[in-house]
Image (cartoon, rainbow, N blue to C red):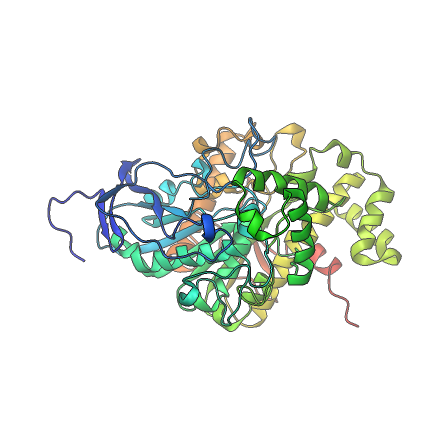
Length: 526
């Protein structure tokens, strides 16, 4: 699509209407671009619907509202906050960063934020696509989607249906109502990218979807979805909590009933009449009701509803739809420290408490032996350390390794990594915690200055590791292979060597880096 000489390269003409962006940091940025109709009124708890478009040139120079979520002034002691006002239900927008509005057909990176299914925003400064666009000559897209009760509440059979669903926004292949409105949003955004990204200088046939934590679960769900077959070339899964036990409809309806009581509503129709701040407040109550000692709190979860999601996203990556997709997957060495290391209650955990928690997974007869195995793996470990290593393995490391093993066994490409650099903050108690790799991947520490977990990092070590990781991600998005000249040779994960790249102050490719955890958590054959 030729561009006339002398035309304003901050303006893009789309089928839905024209956009005016801005030049920032050497790239052109378009913010708050609608990809679906506002999910308000009768469209609350309905699948994402097409946007009607607009007349004239729409200003796309300022961020739009983020999805409604809980907000605490001053943030948290690890990230310093993961989403800030303004919030609004009218949030189904995306941001685009491009080196130039031209016909270059650059590889495309779509970023899906995490946040425990209850927080986050594609507009967070730390998730800016500027560095990837500039350093990698990529077109980068970040999205906002419904989270918390507005995205993850399962309303029950029949409640999620609405006008305009004939286009199949979110259906896996059958009729009937479903849940997972977050997934219908993301499918709509991905279809928008496929249809529109060429206008921004991107290649619709070379799309990588990447996400972290809950965003990595989303990425896997999208990669294995029938509607995306042939649409996604590659995926990057950063710290996916694939160990989560995702409920089916019956189990989730118990949670829905508890939420309705907290919200003071008898049914979903009454919920639709409530202002969104009341819905978010009721979600805080559900958080308190669903917390269990020694488990990562998840008041809202994806639901295996048989309509929008027919299997666990980790399993979806092993199906035929995702067979030809390049996969990179990784975890941090001490994922669970993010949620537990600074909690004084967990710091004071006793051996008996931790052994009882181990028994939930391994059975009471094996619990003492498993505790001893974790002690041997971390000399001088306190009970709290054993607990955090157990949670890291159960929720993140071992399920990721199992996925890598299964993909490798079927001859499909997969690259594995572990992020090992410990954070000096809080006397080192965080270790290499969940989320710590994010500013290294984006290589934009200036956008993370509010984050307490980065305090005390030596600049030379920090910047060197960020360069290695950022360039590896760029190489993978461009070619499907993360190797670059300044990185030790990184082989794909296979069931022989099990090569895993360790990102630390010294970057090293190691064989079977997670071997102790893999063997300890090996499934028992009946």
